Amino acid sequence: MRALVISGGGSKGAFGGGVAQYLIEELGRNYDLLIGTSTGSLLVPHLATNEIEKIKHVYTSVNQKAIFSRCPFNVKMDKWGQETIAIDHFSVLRNFMRGSKTFGESKKLKTLITDTFPKSDFEKLQASGKEVIVTVSNLSLHKTEYKSSNEETYEDFCEWIWMSCNYIPFMSLAKKNGCEYADGGFGSLVPIKEAVDRGATEIDVIVLETEVTYYNNLPSTNVFSLLSNLHGYMMDRIEKQNIAIGKYAANNTDAIINFYYTPTVLTTNSLVFNKEKMQAWWQSGFDYAKYKNVELNEIKEVDD
Image 1 (tube, helix red, strand yellow):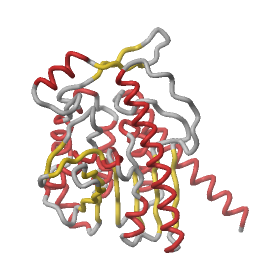
Image 2 (spheres, one colour):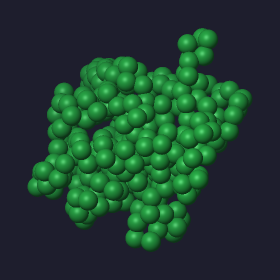
Image 3 (cartoon, helix red, strand yellow):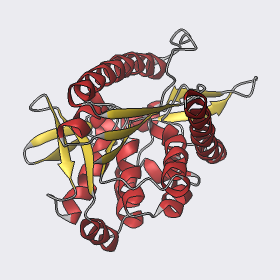
Image 4 (spheres, rainbow, N blue to C red):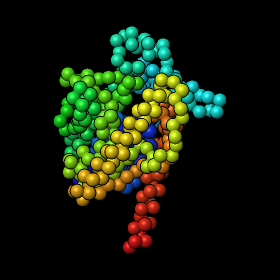
């Protein structure tokens, strides 16, 4: 059984979409199982139903206003032309006064999900025989949960996709079935083991981060940058642990894993959705997948 796994990574999901487009359209990969975390969960339903151009349009046209119903930060350009992030204190204070537990709210993302993934596409997915899994973190029970398109209703599945993307405390804290849920990346950023446990024998894994660290974070300048650095540290540890566990599980079942990392640092803040950059990242992902597979074929020919 062939599986596709796409990690979390916010706006860097555009790169993952480009990689997946090449694998599906150019190499003809037909995946039985697709598993996504956070931004990966936004991609996998559309990839499973071959609605690639639709999700490409979303990723290359989306902006902050399409994601946040209450955006907790401001994006400005410094004198060197670099994007800088700062807390929008007025927006955050207003959010707290309304009883919110988080700095911002991402309810517009929930609407975007249902608008771009209608019930007809969900029914098409279920009829295809493919299974799509999204990862969520159950904060109440301290466990990672995997929600399957084969076991959920359309409404519930869309909610799970949304919850998988809620990067708290900057986005909404969701409640369902008496539990609080947040971004799936807090528990399983790269859910390789889940693919192995579900019987995958060959797994293409798109990791929306470089394989090695190429930079040091700058000193924190405000609360937002401190939290971003802290979250980045935790996510880096979770990613490496997930990959190590996934490799171990694959070795025990003789499953093959093909990794696709980002070759360069795309951004240091994946909560910023810049249309021009995301257009470039999608094409970059497509080109990188093409280059890597040409290189692998050349190596195989030499070995033969």
